Amino acid sequence: AKAQLFDKEGPVQVTFKDVAGLSEAKQEVEEIVSFLKNPSKYTELGGKIPKGALLVGPPGTGKTLLAKAVAGEANVPFFSLSGSDFVEMFVGVGASRVRDLFRQAKEKAPCIVFIDEIDAVGRARGKNPNMGSNDERENTLNQLLTEMDGFGSNSGVIILAATNRADILDKALLRAGRFDRQIYVELPDLNDRKAIFRVHLRNVKIDESVDVDLLARQTPGFSGADIANVCNEAALIAARKGKSFVQKQDFMDAVDRIVGGLEKRTKITT
Ligand code: ATP
Image (cartoon, rainbow, N blue to C red):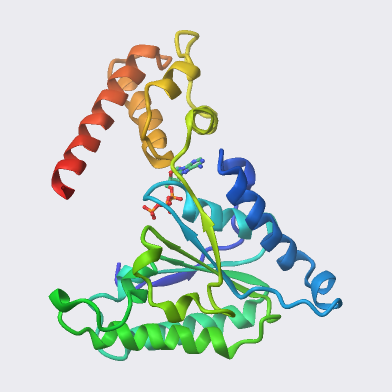
């Protein structure tokens, strides 16, 4: 896995209709789609297109999905890399990966560069005594800052980064001209859960016993990723029983199973 730290996955098939709920976040990223599709509309009036935005929210809420959907809607390439890939890297490698990534992105502009788990590289410098000093991480972070400053705001490269923890990020990343916009990607409410269930049930053969409203009511606190999991798990449970449709009881069993997993997760982290 280490060999592939980033890849050009575009053209991306994901669009906004794959992202349920998140109406405010979608509204904010719609503007980014517009920047990518029609930059001159903004630059001719003397506007500077933002270089990046930070997607902030709990795990599994659709940050990666939303970033891909921006690329899909604008029909531009999607480059991605994950901050956690740098944690155990040899000295000098992280920074050169970042350089390579931006070189490729500039060649393919307009495009999206997505940095998942940016906190893994972007934690405030020199503030983690337990981890010891991690020069490689700092080098990587510095390279990222250098790259962001190095290209013009109208270069056509827009960087989206995701984190669960905006509060621990190095302030240098949040400065004007870098990630100066934050977009919140929250856990879904009841209506959003219904919408997410509908998206993930599009290709599941359900019978009339399945009630999406009830499922949404029975899954408070679930993320979009948890809901996707329930739908998949229910289909597997039904298949295991040799059914030709997925039924209400299969969903109940799937919810129980996911709730069990969530409880374990909470016990470990607290
Ligand atoms: P992490 O912080 O763990 O990286 P994330 O916020 O980037 O998570 P995604 O990887 O985008 O979350 O979500 C995982 C999967 O969960 C998606 O591929 C999708 O199947 C489902 N999902 C999450 N949120 C939504 C949503 N709002 N609408 C539809 N599907 C969703």
